[in-house]
Amino acid sequence: SFDGVIDMSNVAAQTKQLLALEQVQEAERVVYISSDLVYGPYLNGPCNEQRPTNPCTTSAEEKAEGEAAVMMQQDKLQEEESGRPWTIIRPGRIIAPGSEKSLENWFFLRHDKEKRICIPGHGQYLVGVVHVADLISGVMAVVRTSDAIGQVFNMHSNDPISFDGLALETASILEREVKSEDLAHYDESQFAWVLRRRYQFPIKPIGHLIPSVEKAKTLLDWNPRFNTSEALRHSHKMHYNEMSIEDELPELDYELDEMILENPQKQIQIAWSYPCINFNRPLGAEDADVADTGNKWDWEV
Image (tube, rainbow, N blue to C red; front, side, top):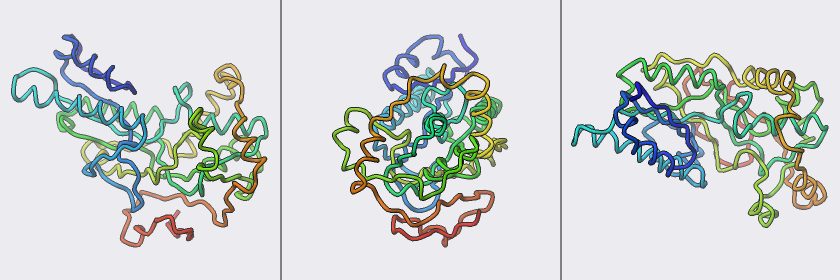
């Protein structure tokens, strides 16, 4: 038997198979690494763990189904004295050398080839990221306390960043001079036939992905060590400089990018700069106006 089980599967069927194993049913704790994508799109401020899930992508649906399977363990524990206490962690996009789907390397590879970055929509949707070391420390905090049993925790850094911000920050890390006006924004509906075959951007622009992490900070005494910039820089140093990105990734697929750049009439003209929120202060009512209105946001940096 195991003292604990940590499941990071992206396929709900695999999670269910894992939970059916006798060794897992005898484990002291089951920790399921889900995703903040299960919340689905929302436009007003950060959400907390009480928000109902509303997955709108295939991967998010798989994670939500996996969560439901894990939660059933607690019901069995109470009703049949079988199954194990569970905890669910919903991280933001994971930043780390060797990540299965590396968000940052999508940008690094294009900057390295001095390619123009193509971003869907207005590029202003905010996303939370978490360095893998901070995620691991969160998992360790979960297994060390019984207060985490039957709980869900969001985890990401304190400074969510926009899609445009990711492009500019990663360019800065590679010391490439890129300005906001150098980014190409495009209307996904104009390229639907290509996107059905192969999705382009590493994050689907469904809305802001900035769930609150106050619960993890309060109950687990968890605080991320890496901010967004530090996480990106560390990943670049480890994965790009020391291991060589060319050895880790397939050849750059720039087919859709070229289609976008060859069709300026299908691009979107953007006239605002990207924001970066500091979640070390609580968000107030004045921060709720984050709808897609085309207005600049005046959040404190």
